[in-house]
Image 1 (tube, rainbow, N blue to C red):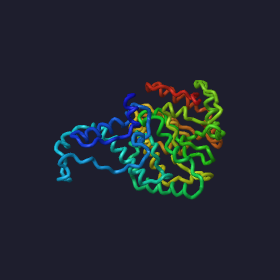
Image 2: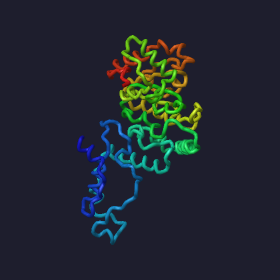
Image 3: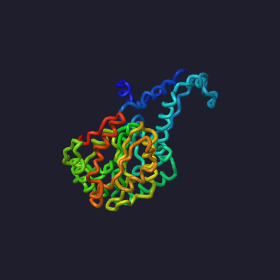
Image 4: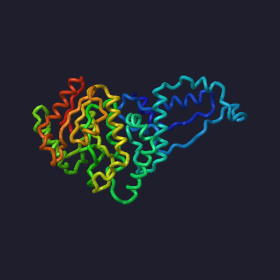
Length: 336
C-alpha cells in the first residue's frame, strides 16, 4: 500500500511513442485510484487541483497518414485491462470533474466529497434538480449574506468513513445558523463555540446513562463520533446566517434522502438509527426496519427534551444493539 500512496502524488507524464503507450498510461491511472480499504479520501485526491485539460496521445508511426484509424493492437491491448470496479471508479472521477467544471466555487458540490458517498449519491448529483440547487447556493453566497457552513465543510460528513462502514445514524434538520458554529456535522459545533442547548441536553443524557462511560467535554465538537462510524447528517446541508430553514425545500432533502437510503441498502444488517423528533422519524421512512434498528424519541431541544428524550437511554441501547449485531460499540466519551 505504501507504494500506491507514494505514487498518488506524482505527476502523470505521457510517454512519447512506443507500442504500449496507452497501456502504460492506463496502468498509471489505476495506480492512482484510492483503494476501497484505505481511509476515506476525497474522490478528486488523485486528480490534483488543476482543472482537467484535454490532451491527445502523441501519434505513433503511421498514424499521421490515417488520423481516424486506431493503431494496430490498441483494441486487443485495452481489452480486459480494467476490472469492472476500476472502470466504475475512473468513470466516477470523470463525472465529478465534469460536475465541478459546471459548478463554480461556492455551489452545492465540493471536490472533497468522500468517494464512496459520491458514488452512492451520483444519480441525484447528476440531476437537473441538483444543478438548480447549486445555482441557488452560489447565488446566496454571492449576495453578501453569510451562508453556513463554509463550502469546504458542507460535505464533511462524507469524509470520515466509507458509506458501507456506517454503524450509527443521527439525523438533524438544519445547520446551526450562527457564526462559526456549523461545520457539516449535525448537532456539532466547532471548538471554541459554546455548545447549543440541544447538544447540552445530549451531554446530560449521556452523563445520566449508567451504562455509558462519559465525561462532558469542554467543547461541542462531535468529530470523535464521526471517526467511529456515526453519521451526523442534517436534512439540509446549508443555511443563510440568522435564518433557520432558509435553504429548506431547495433540493438538499433529495440528496440526504438518498444518503439515508444508501445506508439502509448498502450497509450490513444492524445499523442503529437514532431518530429524535418527528422530522427525523419521517426522514427515515425509507429505512428497512427488518434489517436495521430504529430508536425513536422526542427531540433533545429544550422545548421537547423533558417529554421523552431525557432518560430514553438511547446511547447505551444503541451499543447493546451494535454488540448483538457483531459490531464494535461506540465510545461516546471519545471526543478529544
